[in-house]
Length: 263
Length: 250
Image 1 (cartoon, rainbow over the protein chains, first blue to last red):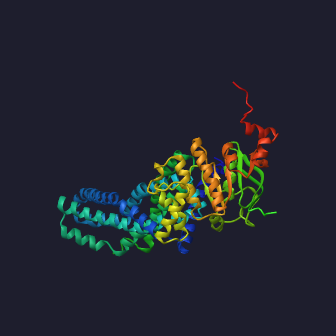
Image 2: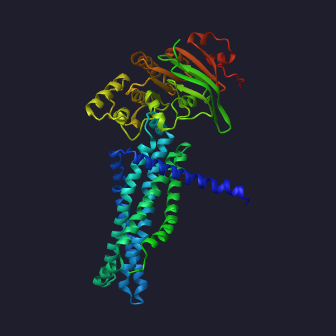
Image 3: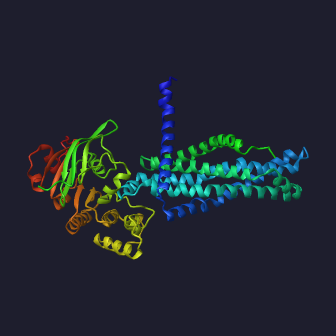
């Protein structure tokens, strides 16, 4: 493939999307800095993003912790290292699984809904109506969603991790008969505040990725119902990939700030 | 002579490879109702969207109250948009809000906090468009004509200087169309607003127009009074007025 065709076929749309996302994030930051925040809409979005995601986050966290504990126990038991199951699960939940899985679940539940709602508004001229009524769509639609996501995502990640560790304790101690005192003591010994910080930072970044990708896809939707469907699919796929890719780079970068294995 | 309120010069717009507007020039004077006729897909709605900054032209100028608006940034257009109301073809009501909240939206966005004042103004606006008593209904439960009426109430609740109507009678039966036409006339008299009505409905045109323009091939082909339109000998305008497609009968 020649370079110009690579550029027009792959790089150009990618750079266009990244540029669009950066512009939307910048415009949102400027709106927030200028105080164009609609408190009531933000609270409604917090309820939608945070409260509405309880079931998926609870189930995801609890069952991931439970299954990971069982699998780790089956491997570690042959080495007589059952009491290491707790810290392995806890560290994995804090540093990787909790934020990534919460991000993926929220992208599927909330991100898709945001794109569908904004996209439908776009193709039915409701966003044009907003603009015609002298209301900036970024102020009205993106800012409340972004603020709600930045508030809710770190809390959802903490909830997912907490339930994962609790489920791990329950399965490890009550089902697989790991000594509860050792389990708890090892979790305490090997997890630190920096692990929680890592969770929160990742949750914050993933929340940003989800909300800007979702809102941009919605704002750019065209071609009626088919276009909204296409935008919604694009949101879930793009957000999920962005979370997985960003997770790797965040892990590498945050490991410099909060090195693992230094205890 | 009165200065035009909106002054459009040599407006050009392309969508893809198609040139929609090819140097459109038109003036809109204060207090008048100008009806813009033209074939479906001829660029009438596209032109209307330029007047409120929803689209930017490739070239040409639009001057509103002495200010060139084509180069204004999105946020700088807000003061202009507060003076221009627009009725979209399908109403473009916010489907997550009921009728009351849709109509109250511009007031609340402009900082009206007092619930009683909002309620009173919404009731007045809805009464003006004969939609009193429907304020708790959701847009999805309204007919096409009702949606347009509610959208009109939303457009006039903070009385604008200009109202742009995009196909206000399209898809409505003759009775509802007539009531919308009467409403447009009534609003013009009562609020003294300048109106630009995009339509291809000649009955509506005869009912409401002070002046008529016909858009053809991206330019204004005819400009005059409704009486001038009826008497014109321009073959293109005649075909439109008489409803002749010029195609062979199969």
